[in-house]
Length: 230
Image (tube, one colour):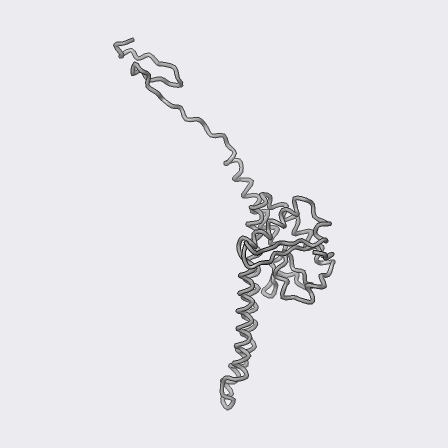
């Protein structure tokens, strides 16, 4: 994707009809391992069908907003001030609540893709390093296409929009610092499990019995003083 801002995204309704993309800005500042971590993150989105989930969530949020507007213009009794105030409050609060739910789901899917992406690439530290560089790049380089279409912000690995630094209710992405911390915890846990998997397995000692009925250990016969054939 020809764009100076370092970023990446995934799109497609299912793994069979999906694509992942990186911007030219990303390819300029990340090394090979960091690019692998980013691609693993985007492939995790594809595997988890996150694009479809977020599309359904956005559709439901839009439907809630539309129904709230219908309730405001066509519902209630204008002679009943209490009911009319309730309709106005619903029309104002329902879209906000739907938006908060949509953004909360988006942040949850990012954490999930970070974890699975770190496992796919086998090195969560590489993804953590990439996120730090991407966050810094997105802070200094504006993505004009994303600014014109802010609804697409949730597709990117880091928020391409300006003014989104806090991990709050109105952010489509978790705080990058929080994501990096979780990835480093994942890397530490993977490192602790690695020695256990690589420990050599001890070959069990087998006891066999020879043709004379004498127990054999390791292929050599051990005499038995109680055996009359000795």
